[in-house]
Image (cartoon, rainbow, N blue to C red; front, side, top):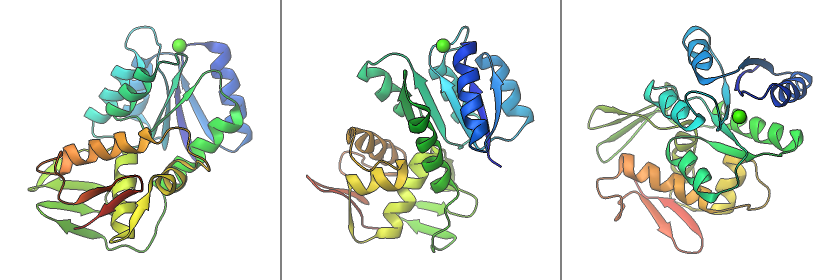
Length: 226
Ligand code: CA
């Protein structure tokens, strides 16, 4: 049974999400603010965090940064009431894996959660250890090192890197990445893929603007060349 930490201050919203997820067999623990959420993350193990953006005290963006700063690479889904594009981009840049805009349908939320959990726990045939340039990826422990220094990748960044390595030397389309990683069957916004690729390059490529390993094929997608 997957354990989900829900950090949401609106009681009615939290109850609705909890009931829907309970029905689908998830175990949901609710925290009414980020501080309680932080305590729970220190004492319990979770498979995924649902994180509201607008919270009293520390907001969802700060909380997401804190989760990554602690080195936790579990999937984080942001729940945002605001529709501004800037929120989505900021959310992804600070290490969120996905976001849903309120009001959302429970069906949509559950589909996203299932997709994130499916690929967080997928086990395709791939060597335990893979190296390129001065980067070493340990698929068994989900750890990445650059010149033997640990690099923190989010769950989604790690999954995209894994997919690119698995499919090398083929080009993978943005649609395929969206489908494999987020479970989308059509493209809501392909910039979500580009933003994540940009983040991976910043973390692993010596020259992110002139990448040596994760190449862009304009109008098509991406290819790993290590
Ligand atoms: Ca709120």
